[in-house]
Amino acid sequence: MEAVANGVYQVKKGFRSFVIDGDEGLTLVDTGLPRRAGAVTAVIDSIGRSVDDVRAIVLTHSHMDHAGNAAELKRASGAELYCAPGDAPAVQGDEAAPTPPFMDRPPFGMLKPLFGLMPAGEPAGVDHEVNPGVVLTLPEDLVAVPTPGHTPGHTSYRLDRAGGILFVGDAASHRRGSVARGWFNRPTPAIDGSVQTLAELEFAIACFGHADPLTSRASAAFREFARSL
Image (cartoon, rainbow, N blue to C red):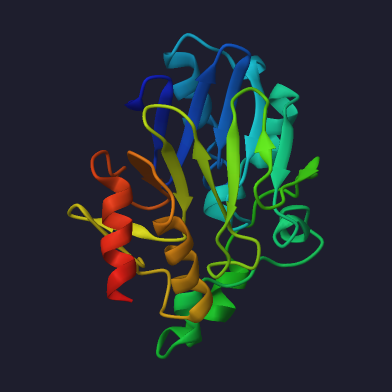
């Protein structure tokens, strides 16, 4: 278990997801790879909570390393599941999740058939479709920020705590104190436009899907990267 800020914890087990502890219960941001729900519940147990305390599960997008345990954790906790409309069909199993953007460029295109063979998470029913600017109030206030590009409905979330904590998902990544697109993305108008959107926000900490949190000058780092695009 790794504390990102007071009451915010990172699950780091071959994936990144986050536990937000609040007065009314817990919120999970992303759920990790399929069949690894135990990594999430272990962090919950380590802070003196139980899976029964989870009130909301919020997904940045539908890829299996973010939504893979949504169904199991929802069933175990009774929590409600939140996801943007653009990714909800894939989370619910109505369509396949889109391939990551880096597979759209050679030579990685040959990997697309293999992506479809990888184990997908169990379909999970979406209780609430998240729209731009919506405030999620169970149990903590999270503001949804649309960041399409990595997937059609990719959404980042800002938590009003500790000077602002941004849950970036895969909209960008972090390398040695600087923000980057990440190996899983490529330069497209949508992806770079989402970085520009995040650069307009104020936040002290940024939490990523595939990198350690950026815990100082986070919004300034986003602005620096956005100016380079």
